[in-house]
Length: 163
Image 1 (cartoon, rainbow, N blue to C red):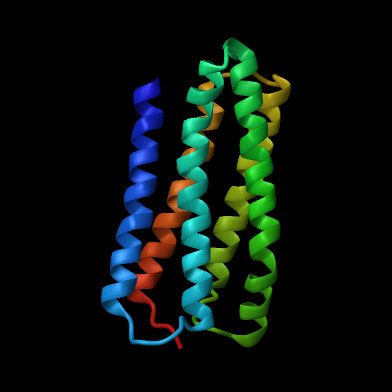
Image 2 (image 1 turned 120 degrees about the vertical axis):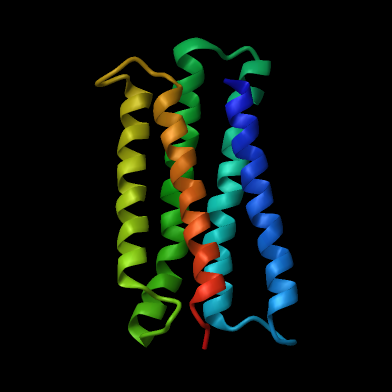
């Protein structure tokens, strides 16, 4: 299991790092446009959240947290992260929605928000041990969601023009 979380950390770091290279090589001189900044923020929030959260169970285990308590605490951290990320990114998303920017896609936003709600609920259930015994499966689902959100934004940076 530590190998799985190490792999997620490596993928997250690779995604964030490769995005930096892509942005530096593929953009015009000057400041980022608002849509570029928004896409990068969504990508970095997702990939860096996945990076740090994938390391959380390893660190918690090193501090002596194990068994169900490990997954309860990890799921609590995931739920808090997903909630805070949603709050942090909702303001800019609404501004782009109102301005009809190409950075905004109703389908992408609906997918990301729906995924965030599902991940939050699954983490809460894992935390509470409501439908199953707390374990790594629910936590892993959240990591995959965070990575997927970053990948979607990476693809949008590559293929959807910014104003």
